[in-house]
Picture 1 (tube, rainbow, N blue to C red):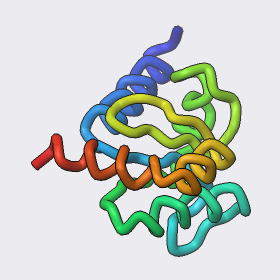
Picture 2: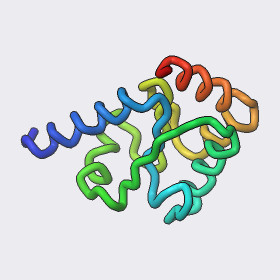
Picture 3: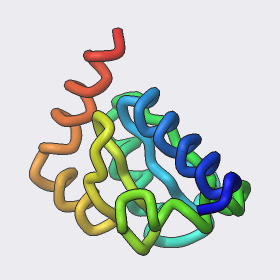
Length: 112
């Protein structure tokens, strides 16, 4: 594995570890660049809980290497409390059941 790949994976690990809730998406929550990212980030915003995002289109190395981080091939990717939750469909399912808000609230509470 090249130094560049190792550094990128270390950066991803740091982002996932240091943010209670982080979504890797195409674009930003205010200007998503794909429908799946739009739907997933909207589900997060609807909880009114704090979350971080990484625009993978602005960081080609993360775009390229994030799928290998947790063996999840698609975007967006949602991490809560350091664990991969899944993509758009799972985020929407968690939102519909009310679990998303609870998970995000609990993760954010650990940071205070």
